[in-house]
Amino acid sequence: DAMVIQNPRYQVTQFGKPVTLSCSQTLNHNVMYWYQQKSSQAPKLLFHYYDKDFNNEADTPDNFQSRRPNTSFCFLDIRSPGLGDAAMYLCATAGGPKNIQYFGAGTRLSVL
Amino acid sequence: QKEVEQDPGPLSVPEGAIVSLNCTYSNSAFQYFMWYRQYSRKGPELLMYTYSSGNKEDGRFTAQVDKSSKYISLFIRDSQPSDSATYLCAMSPNDYKLSFGAGTTVTVRA
Image 1 (cartoon, rainbow over the protein chains, first blue to last red):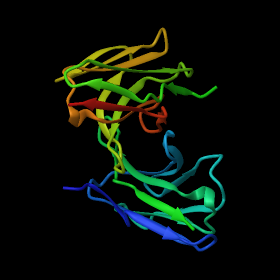
Image 2 (cartoon, each protein chain N blue to C red; image 1 turned 180 degrees about the horizontal axis):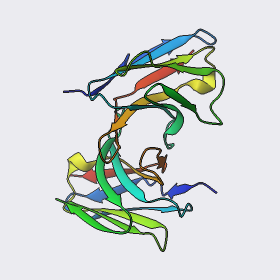
Image 3 (spheres, chains in turn blue, yellow; image 1 turned 120 degrees about the vertical axis):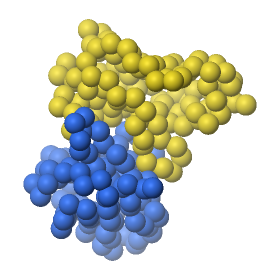
Image 4 (cartoon, helix red, strand yellow; image 1 turned 45 degrees about the vertical axis):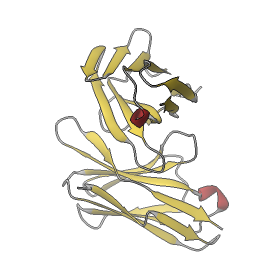
């Protein structure tokens, strides 16, 4: 059973058109993360939440925003996608004694 | 210099061979070391988790950490075609914020 669910799996948007990616979890973990992964590159942390506390990475562009309305859900908003934002976006959660990160299957974003 | 360096490969081996993967790192504060496996167009899944230096074995997989050399390894014995994937090393000083390597793509030929 999927524990971290990302929707949609594939998203196509137009240059400059806002897009929202969603993530839900059934693990009841405190921490949720958003990563950007481009082809053959390491996942790059964009931001994370510890409960409702939002933590932005210093180099995350202002174009990227996030919301976490409750424990189970987290959203990634890209306000004005550029061609360089085409990537796989991964959501992860962490909790338990070892704080292991569990990843969703990702959303592959294409920008036309 | 990247915080975590990982040879991207690709690596192609025949079925049954031993696969050897490794990462080096620069941050001496790293204490938690992980290997994730990522199949094509899927999210990473945790394969091995190690705290501090030493070896850990789980079935056909062995993880080694040498903190003095800032070097970690993953060995896959008796490799199978189903092991074909990208393997990402990851590490952290505090077990909740990870630094990843770029991943090594492995193909096991039947």
